[in-house]
Amino acid sequence: MATAHTATHSASAHDHHDEHEHHDNFITKYIFSTDHKMIGKQFLVTGIFWAIIGGLLSIIFRLQLGFPDMELYWLKPILGGWIDDAGKLDPNFYLALVTMHGTIMVFFVLTAGLSGTFSNFLIPLQIGARDMASGFMNMLSYWFFFASGVIMFISLFIETGPASGGWVVYPPLSALEQAMPGSGLGMTMWLIAMTFFIVSSLLGGINYITTVINLRTKGMSFSRLPLTIWAFFLTAVIGLLSFPVLFSAALLLVFDRSFGTSFYLSDIYIGGEALPNTGGSPVLYQHLFWFLGHPEVYIVLLPALGITSEIISVNSRKPIFGYKAMIISMLGITILSFIVWAHHMFVSGLNPFLGSIFMFLTLIIAIPSAVKVFNYLTTLWRGNLIFTPGMLFSIGLVSFFISGGLTGIFLGNSAIDIQLHDTYFVVAHFHLVMGSASFFGLMAGVYHWFPKMFGRMMDARLGYIHFWLTFIGVYMVFFPMHYIGIAGFPRRYYSWTNFEFSNMYTDLNMFVSVAAIITFGAQLIFLFNFFYSMYRGRIASLNPWRANTLEWTTPLHPGHGNWPGEIPTVYRWPYDYSKPGAPEDFICQTVPLSATPESNLPHEQELVKLEKAIIADEEEVLVANESKES
Image (cartoon, rainbow, N blue to C red; front, side):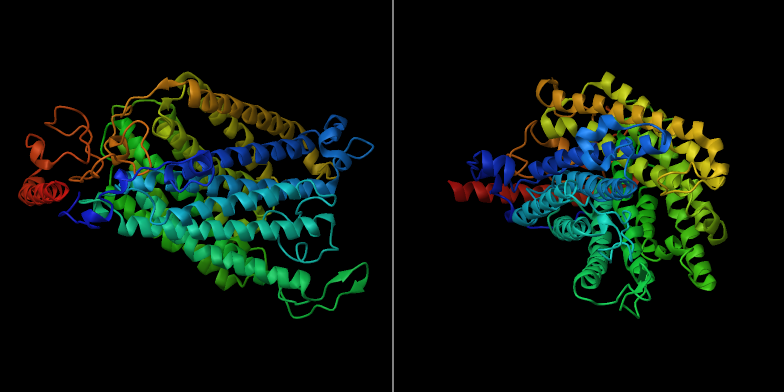
């Protein structure tokens, strides 16, 4: 529960921000906006665009995997020369599809689309700030992301094809332009695009951290922050510490590609001819990449978990169970995420003793994850559940987090991982625990905060259809992959029909591909619901979910500055739901404890005296301001 009042910035810092008239034209309001809410919407719409592209790419390579003998002449108008005269997909382009699908979904959708959207939109609203610490830097973060996306999109259409080294772009494939068609210009554009993306992430992360630390409203101590803000804050810390390492990995890769260095190359033969590179090691790249790559899992997951914490509490009409334990578990995940990266490298020739250390640390990280799951389930237990679409997607996230997380225990064991690492078991694991869970967190957030974003409600019936088709579809796609993975079915293979043992899984592969197509089709329901409701949806009330946090105290269409008058003062934590003695089942953070004597707990009664002194100080400031104006 919240402790004593903490004033985190002076009242004068933003006193008259809202009184400044913003005469924005179309360009400054919708394109080069410095309003955090508009920037959050820009990230969201751009993320939706990239989700469509990434999903379409996956459908194309699922057609190849599920129906390897199918003739794909009908795709020739779209893919051109990548469909040969026999109607078959070019093997080089298959690897490019896998590479771009992974890059787009991990970075452009689940990092920028999720964290960029909700960190931007919710941080100032939920902590009681007029805007981000730097609106200009915030605008730059989006436009660096946009530029990154433009470069990556153009790379899809070049003659030699986009990057083809897998989404992790391991050397030597990514370091030698002559290795394969996608190792040339496409890989160069991938590296440039990711450099822009890293700059975008760092600009955003600096802004989020600075805003949370410095711009909280009166009374908003760290112990009164919603769990969403804790998640966004810690996500920004992880990104700020890990993305520069990916930048260094990419920079050394550029040196190897263009300047003749040998950071990652040694003893390479192409066509029987030895290259001059000596002394490098591709394992160095793996260390650098996965030092970002594993924290990236939590850069994607933590915002989704924070969103889920808020939505489950609101729609259970109960306080979140174990508020402090949730914060401690997120802190534990933040620290441990930096020291488990080498479990991705158990098959790289890693020293077995070192592997045992990383195995131990990997299994430990399951503890804070289990704490979060336990707290979600306990919050749901005997709650007065309201099954909104946002609530359903949040529960779906918990389901994927459990089922996908359990398979992570197997892969965390180095001896078992060596057998399963290059199979579909790994594909199933990370698509459930990272991809699908985070995607469901994104969907939950959109359904829940859509009224605050656009002042209208999304259609709940379409939301239910979208959820059930997607939830069932995801399990139909990825659950069978565990079984074929245990049987040794290899991942990253363009064609598996040459292996006699794998032919028995032909029907299962077809089933997975059909399920993937249906699941992708279900997202069209969401797209219609989203864009139709934006303009034609039912007008929302100020607080449609009867929630406690500060964003619901703003007008239906908040201007640049969020609150038209003074920023509200916070007097309590954000989870006072169904409090015994209270006339309603929710008490907003802005309601003073002195106004609810019938429901105050013993320690809250002690805070009433301090609260009255704060209110008296505020009244004195208000009187002083009025006298100055007169």
